[in-house]
Length: 245
Image (cartoon, rainbow, N blue to C red; front, side, top):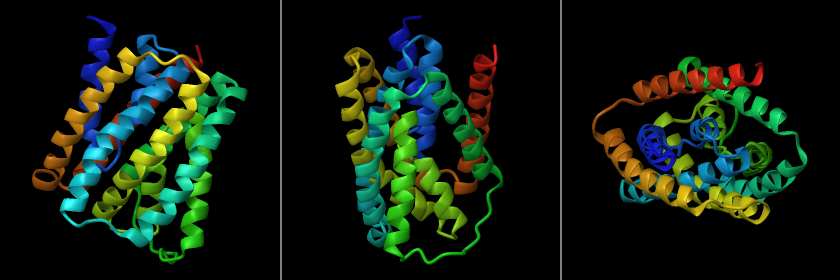
């Protein structure tokens, strides 16, 4: 099977699933593209662009359904958009194996939070400085490993007691802009395979539309979280096995 067609099918599946949870699925897509033979930096760039296309659909649907909480969304959007490109820029100075370990640990963390995480309201979510600081720290880390940061932000918001479905709306609304900023940073540092970008972006666009419609009309948020959590754990396990060989 052609490597680009494989990338299309995998991206279509991941984007459909992850868009139901309010994310673009870059965290899962990056190691898979790397397994297929694409370089790690290119896989990160493709993953970020997939987030842009998949979650742009989510943003439009969230606006239509009036699910956005701007007091939460705006501070996170500003900080992620500023600091994610900074992390992406500094990634060129880090060891690739180290970044892959960081990605694997992040996948395990995300998996645990999605499957076992409980809502515990501990902080005031109206504190804009706290939200900005969360976005800044998550942005730098996310830029380094090539993800949008949506899964980390989602885990934090849910841990702080924010409604999971509203969290998905917030995350899917900040990811397109912050991910595009990160993609542009990688595009300046590496040679972009635009054939890969095009086929994965198209798959993400289709998957984002399908997934969001399923989210609103078919599945419960608890079901979505567990499915994504299990998938992330399996991908993390495969990535760790490749790193310890």
